[in-house]
Image (cartoon, rainbow, N blue to C red; front, side, top):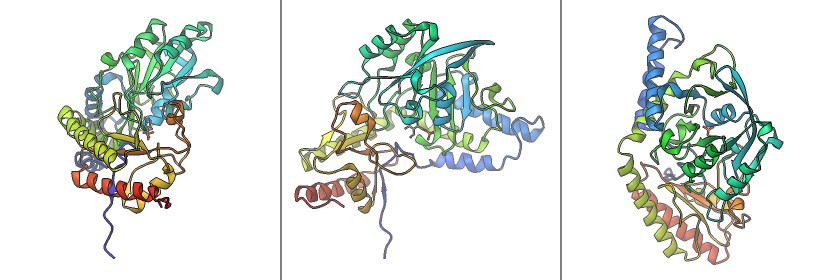
Length: 389
Ligand code: PLP
């Protein structure tokens, strides 16, 4: 039997390794040295990491000296989300963490804060953080316990909705707090600038932008105010993250970052055009389709939709059987589809759930058309009351 054509439309879960990242990874595999060694082999590995640090700094509009490599966004989040900070050598306590209700679990779990030190910031039905709720929470913050820390993502992984980070930063900084921005889904899709966002920390992940899995970064605004490290040991990454750097994955991360900032505007405009055409066709095929966040600012590549009468879990399987990889909310380790906390936070009846289509720079019109054909069949079966899968 001929192999069935697969169509990958789940770029927000992970992006396929880009050609540039693959090449960089293969080249780095040849490096023998430990970047901490002083001999020539060590210095070659160190040079690669220093270059990569400049690339990640360029991507995030930050200083190279302020980039700490980690094993991914989850580790970066667990590093920075802690009550235990240092201002130079002086301990500084963070009293409470305020997270938006739509954060990815990597952030929403609160890192090293205890559960009772974490509070949730509401979002509006439009899927945007409620800034008046943030203001009220911070006004009620008890500074005797320490400074407030706020975590707000740049763009949501399920809906693609872009969050008002700079406005939130003004509120947070007016009250002496720190702002952590999970920029995982925004990197390469939106221009990033530490100063423009007025963020104190940014969290990045390589595999969402065409790099390999297992590399990420915590980018800080300065060097003085830093969290107590999560991983202690040999003092690599200026003591902020011990352990021999994963030069291979970091090389791929840097290559993906260089590609991400090349022609970013033109590439993303083309993706947005393709996504918008796709959504218009979806609405023609099934007039009752609900496209979440369609009226607010969204990432160029993401469509999060619900079809009345189709449970997201059933829909995901139906699309998979049609050869199309998309997801129901965020991918979690068990592969189970749980109720979307993002839809719940938006006040949408999360029982039905929603499906996420996320496109990438390599997604072709043929692939979008295959999705639309499958969408038509699945929506049609639903109308006839036949189980979709
Ligand atoms: N934050 C967001 C918004 C994500 O989409 C993801 C990945 O699903 C993460 C954090 C976690 O990233 P990593 O897989 O690098 O730990």
